[in-house]
Image (cartoon, rainbow, N blue to C red; front, side, top):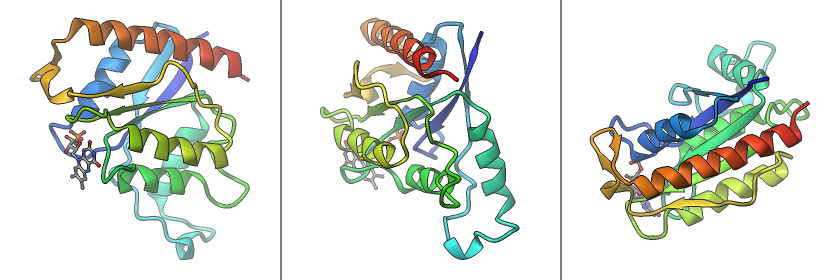
Length: 183
Ligand code: FNR
């Protein structure tokens, strides 16, 4: 059986390295995973006052999309040693109303990246901190902190073969992780 995986990208800019990396992870994945980027750019900022019988349609749409998948792959850049607001907002939107979080139990993995040397370590672990409360089984190993990302692409094309090998290995492990936590 194939498993549906939502890919969340924590950057909105057109030439985002995080998005390029996410697309590369999708290519590197084994065929048992069906990965799709779920848009988070247009989610209205979470406001508890809007949590009525008729919440913003984009919240409902997003919650339905996530409810429908078997797992989640978080791809994030680092903003001020933490996760970008757009990704945190998506996590928050999916976590409510209380007791109805769409995240619970979904096997996930976190990939961070940066043009810098630390590979977004802070962002990676800031996401992981949310996952504890959301009760999402997160693959612990291998970890993915991809540094020097600006030197790894020529346009949209990944030019670093050893990184590609690592991404394939990472996605193989994630597929196993998803199977272990399926149903
Ligand atoms: C950054 N950047 C950054 N990089 C890093 O390694 N650690 C950090 O804490 C930060 N902080 C930070 C804050 C803000 C507000 C911005 C806009 C940027 C740089 C960041 O890694 C770089 O812009 C990446 O290219 C962003 O990812 P995308 O958009 O290429 O996916």
